[in-house]
Length: 181
Image 1 (cartoon, rainbow, N blue to C red):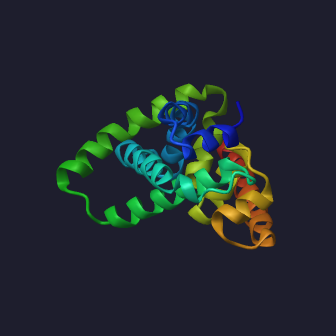
Image 2 (cartoon, one colour):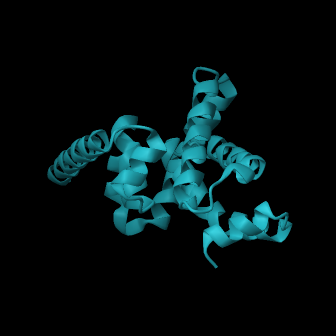
């Protein structure tokens, strides 16, 4: 069933349809949030949870003549940014130690899931946010450049430029990594 049909059912008050939507989007949203938030697992979970709350609260505003996925991911990215901004510089010593200890395990879990792309995912994590987010949306989430421009609220030429420089930086990082091996 198409996302837009599920959304119509939700708008008509069908709670089971929201469960279907949640089930179909949760894993992908969680993986995307972990990458956007540099594998900060607890923040990623919060972002996904808040995203689904916001989607539920605002589903009546969604225009079913449009594609649902870009609308959903715009909300997800906004939640990621909001949580990162809210928590920037607010790490307790315990959180910092736990984060340091868990970061290796989390990154290993993430990379084990994508073993054949280990170097690529590491390279993506090293990109600046301005390049990382469009790369994630295009190549990991499958959005078109126009959709990315809509999600991020910028001109399509800006997206093309960010993708170009992101790919260039990835190529450089991967090349340097190969030589260092």
